[in-house]
Structures are given as structure tokens and as C-alpha cells.
Figure (tube, rainbow, N blue to C red):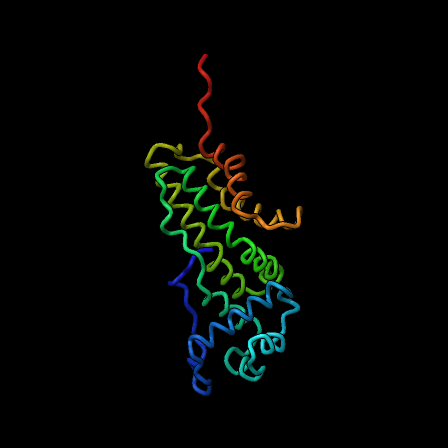
Length: 210
């Protein structure tokens, strides 16, 4: 989803005794971590599997990150994601359709990560924080800006109670479709979902006169 250049964590090699990895090599390791995470889930992910996939040694992984949780958290924080910051079409409906199109292109990867970490996040505050900061919070900020613009244009009534549930609805759609239909929420699905379930609540049609 959204790239977060401001979210950082100590990079490998930052403490004495660690071998400094190049940025390219570090990114290869992070990509291997996320690929294993999507395929196996968090509980089944092992340092052995990551080492084999990234063609590195398990000793290197433990020396750099110490634990699986730290490795996964670093991978989440240092993987660039699609940015929605430039979305501003001039209308709330247009903004939602554009955001849904972009989010839909990332739905397979991000939904798989959310599924993989949903149980672990309940027991690991650091993982939970990383998922919030990397995947969820950026989307909340983008949506908040779009909703504020809509209010300023007079499209969205101040205090509309549906605003509170917009993010919950979108995340619910992303998670529910693979569970119910065995398919990820692609751009077409998310746009239809927004057009029928979100936009009508945010921008209700005026009641007929008479």
C-alpha cells in the first residue's frame, strides 16, 4: 500500500559485532522474509527457510536480528510500498475510485501479510505496531485528507457518522473476499464495493421534494 519513508528502525549492522550488509543485500533478505511470511504464515516461518530462500546463513540472520519477530518487523518497516499521497481528483467519489484501484493492485500481498500476522499481532506489540504503521495508518491519513477536502468542498456533511467506519469497511472487504470467495479484492471489486457500500453513506442522495 502506502510508502512510509518516515517509519524507520535500526538497520542491520548498527551495533558493534554485527557485519554491515549492503542495502541491496538487506533488501533481498527482507523480500525473502515477506515471501515466506505470505506463503507459510508467521507461526510456520523459520529462520532456516528464510536463510535458504535468501541464500544466506542462519547464523547471519541471528547475528543481525536475533529473533524471528525482529526480522519480520524490520522487513515490514524497510519494504517500500505503493503511495497514495498524490491522490486528489477533485471529488470524493473520484478519490475513492482512484485509491481503490491502487490498493487493489497491492491486495494480494498486503492481505496475505495481514492474514499471516493477525494472530501473532495479538501477542506481540512490536509486530502489531509495525503492521499499524506500515499498512494501516498510512491509509487512514490519506482517507482523512480526502474526507477533509470533501467537507471543505461541501460534498460531505460535517459530523457524518459513517466516516468513523470507512477504514473498517475497506479492511473488512480486503480480508473477507479471500475467505468467502477464494479471490483477493482486485481494483474492480473494491471500486464496486466503494460505489455501493461507502459512497452512498458518505454522499447520500437528497430526498425527493414533495
